[in-house]
Amino acid sequence: MQTKRFIVRNDGFVCLHCGHHVPPAKAGCRNHCTQCLYSVHLDVYPGDRAAACGGLMEPVAIEYNSRKGYQIVHKCKSCGMTTKNVAALEDEIEPDSLFTVLAIMNDAAH
Image (cartoon, rainbow, N blue to C red):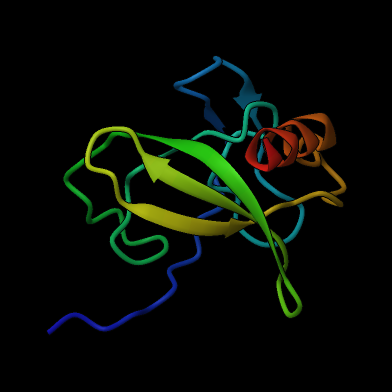
């Protein structure tokens, strides 16, 4: 039986959707592109790299959680799995694009 365990992974990467070179986050773990907000379906539990899918995770919505703040809702374009990831709007190295966050919120409202 696998238990939910957060494995810290904060590596830089090149976005498979837009090609942006994404640096590691100043605090926390970066798992999505700071520009287009896309991610890749790599984990079953955060950081475990145990998912066999590998599909692109499209940012489909932005939600607000009173404890975690703004969260990006990702949906895998290959298998349909959805996940939520905290938006890094105040990261000191490279914050998530506020323009992209607002555009997703605007699209979801219409």
